[in-house]
Length: 86
Length: 139
Image 1 (cartoon, rainbow over the protein chains, first blue to last red):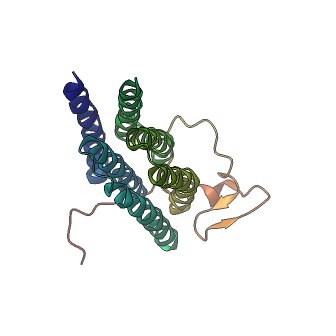
Image 2 (cartoon, rainbow over the protein chains, first blue to last red):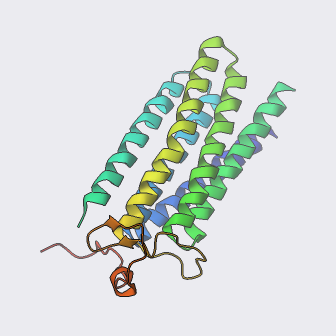
């Protein structure tokens, strides 16, 4: 029972990841792609945490912290150069 | 009992993340897509982090999880606001059924300037921006 539930959780997160990836490819504008990248890294963070709980790996939580920091900086940098673009 | 609560929180978080993925696919323009992902994604990851804290049940983990949730709740709205601002300034068209665009008559896209009075209509009506196409090699 609990195994099936874990699979459902990972499946739902994977489907969200696929949706974000399709938007990253299809665009159509550059801000769409930036939003999709942002969402992809948030979903990756959720995936890492689920994995950490599933296999009892405490250290993966630190990865989530670093990912959260880098995501924010990347988004701000993208937005900065988007505004500068002619 | 604790196991049930953990699985419930994880399932709820996963469903919210899935909804964020659906939202970014189905919503009609950048701003609506952002409103779907910023809220659903943040809340989904927050619930999953809460479940992780309950699962490990240690002081260090609680501190780390609270730090991550605080940081996400602090930065996700800022990031969404900055991208939305950049998208509007870049001239990305709004959805055709948008009912309100307060900046429309006050923002001149040719020099990115804001005016408090209303601009004459020929200055804020810009030609529709073409979609970015990266399929061809730049010259």
